[in-house]
Length: 212
Image (cartoon, rainbow, N blue to C red):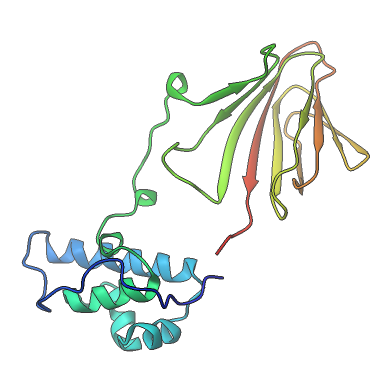
């Protein structure tokens, strides 16, 4: 959990403390700031009370902002941004997580083994750095693919969409058919083996430990 920042502000304190001048509709601004504040506060594991003490903004005001019931002044937003150790605009910019992102197959990032027998396609936007990653895996017949250990605390959920695959994990063998899922700690080396005569398709979700 990230503590409350005591570092210098990320931008100069604004000279004026008036409300926004209406460049964006007030209701849209309230909603955007409220969603961003709640999301960023929870990501840091902060209660409203703790953020209030760090920022000098009352708990009641913070609650109203998160609920979209109050349009904060520039000075209040600056205080909140400084307490969260954020840039000012991070509270004003609509979160990308609230926007739909289309990932075309022919534009996806695909990693393949030198022989092409194993392919991994990322199913998440390249410009993001998520805590959870989602991949499509393709494993040709007769191929044994060794997967390296991920960082300590990484969890994996492997689902077989097509074919049959054997997973060797911690000295144990797990035989999976289409529709089967295996949930395991991915911070150890593991192997995928396709003993069938057809290509296997799998989906892998990796959940990394929080670094804050």
